[in-house]
Image: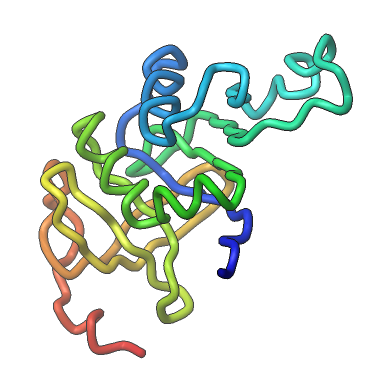
Amino acid sequence: MTETPATGYDGLSSRLVPEAELRRFLLDCFGIAGRELFLGHADRVAEDLLDVPQDTVFAAFCTYRQAGGHFAMSFEVGVEGRLAARVGRREFAERFAARFDAYVLYGEAGPPGLWTVILADGSRLRAAMEEEDDRSVLYATTAPVPGLPEVRVDGGLWRIR
């Protein structure tokens, strides 16, 4: 039997989720105990780990920070293979979007320069985005994004390979 390798789930959320809510979500989503999770603001990781023994291993390691543009928050979640086997990248984004009534952008195997957006209702879109510093702005999607009427809808993005 092949083991699932450790991986990372990086993304952008339209909603800035308070840390306590994010912690509950991650524990529930992956079915782990509190001691198996590290969660901290990306700018404070070193400080947060000062009193943690150096040989401590977390099954899930998540950092987050505020973002700009069409997104309020970015997150990076590193997970052990056993957690990745339970919850895949797309399922994680779907659960996040539904739980926090947000749209979530993440990368999956697809054409370079295009991203996947999951809406709160579970709909999946392909999107093109401009990034500069901490600002990420969608400029085209395959269907409308609630609250972003200025984003051009271009069904042709699905045809790009």
